[in-house]
Length: 167
Image (tube, rainbow, N blue to C red; front, side, top):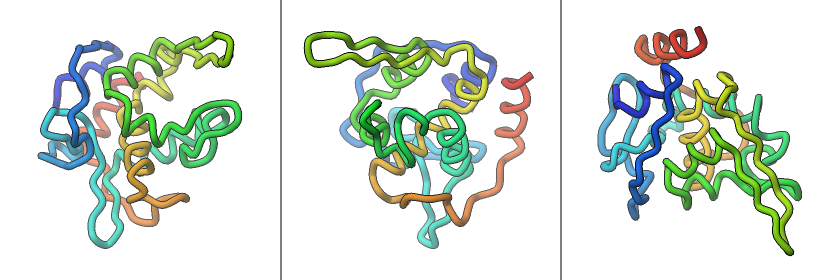
């Protein structure tokens, strides 16, 4: 398992100053049911028949449990919060992690927005990569709106990591 994923699984957050690559969606390799870019950033995998990887499916579920109230269904955004599906494509992965973990305030003459910190919420932090890859898949429009119809099976490693993270 990649170091970042293992750190998330045990509740440790590490932010590395790595710039986003020009191609932050293409699968370079997979490991234990997870897919990664050439820069070791989590990404989605959608088979030709529309079957999504487990993290994308799980991300759909977790996003709608915790994030859609503010950010709108399927990451489309709302009058209250921006579209996360574009953030996942445009924002560096580690910046995304930082904002979700620590929150962010943007208050000035034209903005008054507050993203709460979710760093102590295991329903978000244990599934942060899942939410991220789902948002990337939505941002590319390769995964349409709605619940993915087909999904890969959850790997034993993913199941163990979830169990360890959730306690």
